[in-house]
Image (cartoon, rainbow over all chains, first blue to last red; front, side):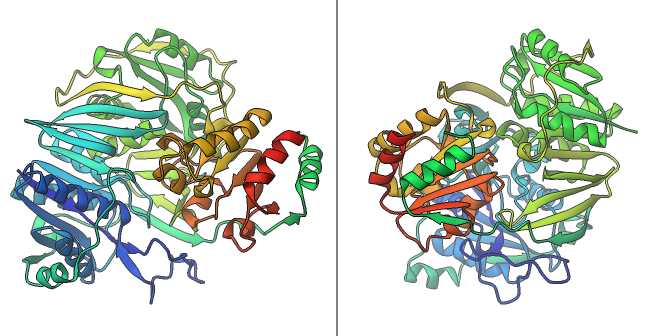
Length: 248
Length: 310
């Protein structure tokens, strides 16, 4: 069974984003970029399924700027077999990304499509569910644990009240939550090897997908700032404050 | 005036709190029809009809909707949307699972996690873990929107008297089935509606210490219990305790962060709390930059002392 993993190049997890002075967006110039952390978990899960002999080939896909090639090389260094980059220098919304992935899935016929539950830049949490809808296939979102059993996959999902388990007929789409696994670091030899793994470069037009945005961003602003308050010297002073607030 | 269709989150017997904020948001967009999809959900439909601001309730009662499987409910919603302009769902794990599937079926770009309604098709929403707020306008003919519960007041749960109309089920897609769930039963207030929350971080050392330090304080205050991602990853508490960018978004009256350093991903989930209290041994911890009241010191002596003195 083939696995398709979808990865996005985003601002690094540890960088504090700054809003541009002109209010058009977030300043990404000279900012460290990395693979979306949830997508790293997706790549790792595919590799583990391959190590178990469930998955035979892993194809990593990204829709993004030419520089997203680095993100795909990271996926290849972790253990993906080949990669497809769909280049767009302008931002592509989740719906259009989902249409591109749907078209790639039609060509590649994967048994599993695994991707992060959300990207930490736009925080949309949409692509996996949209791909599932467009393919007419089941979805296991916010996965905490997955197990392929014959022609289905059992997915334990993280939900508001705890955990829920669903059984999905393959092919299926899985989106990852934080505790599905802990992604490995690529070793130096594997980083070197990844340079010679195949990476195909495509465009949205190759898949007949119109990426014109449906949402117009009118402005981007800083959130209201919380300023630091006071420090109290001891527990008695804290208790006094809590009493003032009517909490205790 | 736009016609909105609201996803009612329920357990077939009663309506969950998350729905009430969604009704408020939907009422700012247009007329509100509430959809109760479930199995044996008469009581939930009756409860939805009582919510102030709801003008009609659609009830889709079918075994296929018992566990809100997205594969089964999304086609139902997409079909009903022929008569509505905007589908509005809570940004809960249920809403986030279903809404994008509906949006794709309708060929609509969803607006996720809205904070405010600025116009018929214009909303604000957080991006980059809430470090920026985007104002976006949809150009789609129909809209799909999810709502951040803490950003809208809750509609009154009673006072309404909407008619309940049964709608035909769209059947079982046959591609997914519900196996089971592990839902922790707790007498504590739910995190997303708690007035006070006590949250613990990695500094709590282990599950037993988390229990012995955090729980007595929470009990004393009648508070909900939360945790940072680090504490959940380390196995101190289950996943549904996690507060943060990708966990639960909370905004209680008082948020007490114990042994939490304050990574931006955690702050994203709690910085709209009215009063933030931080207890941490590192006086340079980022949590103190957002805390209204800070107490620097060893939590293992300070927290039991605080619990004792309340």
